[in-house]
Image (cartoon, one colour):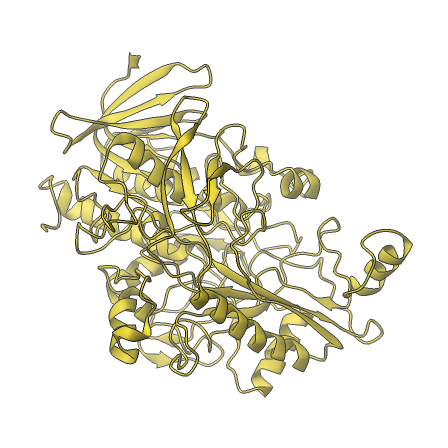
Length: 591
């Protein structure tokens, strides 16, 4: 194994959190290196508009994602089953390469609700301890909305977020989300112009007594220059946003907001196509001394560093902690250990509306990744759960992300699955159908028997145990999905649909059916080292010079997309490192 020159900081993964931390620490004068498993990707060269809108290459063949041949996971629904390797990505899509999930995402820019950060306390006080399922393991985050609000703001302005504020410093604003937590100022750019279906949804929702608002979006509504001086252009509504890189510099990503500045910093370097295999610890096991990684030829390298930042995708953060011997792997039977605990995903439901093709033309191909009108009446604890027998919720909306020809072929029930009649049905319904892959975007709370550990049988190409996923949907989430999907379908019907086909989430959890890529938990934050892997600053309880960033820190997943929150927490952690840790290296919180 070859040893490289010492660095102040080594960062594992160069997606959103890695880019934020690298820029902030390099700007503070530290010598920083980032190690990324996938290739270097840049806007101009990797997805120019001349060929980037290739649905087969990017959506069907998964160009931007990890290949299962590189590494995979094993999956089972319950502890009684044997887990088997995942051979083709289905329920989620592990990102791969510089920019991480920030390259392919839709750019939905949500903030979690204030009560989400103290959810266990809030629900217990409102409904009583016995109202929660006995095996539910939700917990408070250890930080509050008010504490990280400035960092939400910082990320939104980095990205030039388009939106309409609903609550500025406690004052409810017209046209915005009246349920959102107080924000310090308005969005940096106005909301995107809305397509016909979203406008129709907003009218129907208003008529039913709801308060619709434009989805906050990292797709630019106008030209924007962010605080780092990086220029972005307005969205062209091409419909090739989710699953694709944006060649117009109009979707917020590390490539379009922060990397152009970071790569010019002399004290920053990056190694792509290199996979970190373990975090090195000293003899005490209480201090990280660097990392080991392998390059494309299989050669091992040691990168010594004073500080290690783990900024990979959720599930890889957890796996690397386990393989490196950091913390105790969770045992669901004994309910002990923290690494792998409180693993969660998302609970997504849909409703498809079929309209009279002679009266309605929706032009679904005119779309961006995060455009539409939404309601929040059924998110978080914005409604009374007492009579309903479940907790949790989600936002819902008419969000028109694409009308791409391979995957956008909605047809009414009873239509043949191939042949002339199928083709005729596609032709008749393409323009007049309201379809949303995530019309109801629901929470997924944590449970004792939903967790991650190391598979005792299967290994990867380097001889390391694969990560094993044990996950199933519980009655709480199934009830929530059914209730919210019914409410969503009522709005679609009120829009004028002739037929509404509902599809709430049903069990068992199907690893082959796409939900979202929003895997959360497994290395969660909290105030007690017995039930959390990292403290409120995302610093490892066990190894103080190791910080673990990303959605792996979420104690449960709430009814919003996680990116805004994981980025805000990265800025929150960065501030603590710069103002506290660097002055006095060691634990920032004492148990």
